[in-house]
Length: 384
Image (cartoon, rainbow, N blue to C red; front, side, top):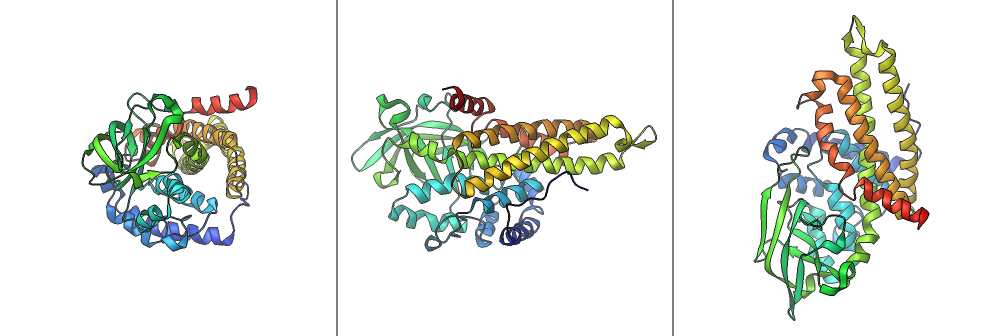
């Protein structure tokens, strides 16, 4: 018997895609993941393999090499399956669901033909550079700036905590193009690998997600061609707000998937592990712990599946996306902590799945907008 209700949002096509993803992970990811964790970065071959398998650019029109599929449920399947095996390093969600929409909805025809085929094949790995040493969620604090020099921009500044920062061939940089404009004086400039003055710092040493390369980026008088302006000049604030709901949904989907998987492996563990001459599962306290987590996961799953369905239909608003992100990631954090506790000393061993999930998942309540920011968005919508 399972505590999870039968899910109703996926069709046979989605489940067939799930099998494809599982086969890809078993063949191209899990055999190499331990080495990637040691290296602090995944191989470019893995990105190309993902492209060959059709896992990149799911929503990109077919004419540019993509899947032409705007159904977010396929992205949800990807997030769930990557989370299930703990493969956070190969950041296909970032590539597909966060950066992809900027290129497809804001890009000119010339930009799409220049960038999207490589985006879909895995030859072009992408990143978005928003966070700065002194500016995280507050866009008004961004200091990276670009001066209009006629046929190009002169970009100066720095960014930090940039996922795919080492591997990225194409970086969407949020920069100030009108000094007095505040958050409404920002633009999106695309910086490409090899541009003079574009430098990367070291691969940052994080407590989790070791194989996901994360770096500081530096821009010293980088000449960015005018044709690399993405979207409207001074339009970054609106562009960013438009796409945040999908980013937060991707994080939320991974959050509930992680919690469910941790509950599954911990339930099996307490059935086998003995204390005081009997399995842990026979102790009332343990049963209550499992019951509480199972109920929380079941209730959260019902809400998340509704949000996934709404988003696939183009009906999800920013407030409910914020609710999903806040609740699912905080649940993930609580479940990871409680499951580690139930594993005792074994849960603290780095090679154990629970320990890795504990450290890998801790960032979930921080990136994509902190829990506190999510609550502020929800509160403002209710109280003004």
